[in-house]
Length: 209
Image (cartoon, rainbow, N blue to C red; front, side, top):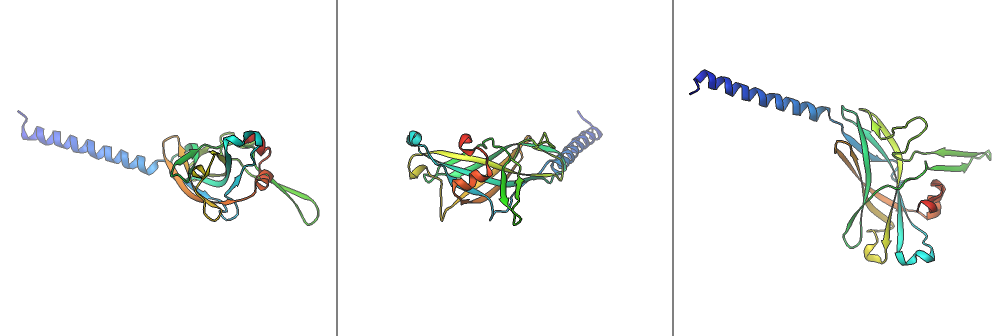
């Protein structure tokens, strides 16, 4: 039989272990990474477009491409690496499709200045290494990275399989996930552009598609 003192000591040890566990949990929750994602210039960018389908491939249905320009940041107190960035699109039949990004070169746009010179600006493809950063998905606390991501939805043989669309706008959800399983979500309204405009930004878009 345990004496009263032994019971008190056992209870105290149990309480202390619970307090320590809660402290460690609080420290983990406080220090863990915290992903955030935002759309960059949502009125200027965030596009979808109809793919031009070759006659020989017409039986596979039409295809819709999506170009998103987002910023991913880590507002937590621990470094992390994001490993997935997916786009969720709803078909007209209610099916939710989770799309994975397609590899693209760093987007570039060129335009003529009033002087007649040609100015070119290179953007970053999300998750793609650059000369100055060979680990573009790694985020220290307080750091962020901007980039473009390209997706497509195919197999649109009739309107049931087309993405939900209203007034040439397609609502989508962008989801980024890090190596710890933390997620950040962002709803984006995608604006329609002609495929030719998308080709101005993405070199070799037809080959990628």
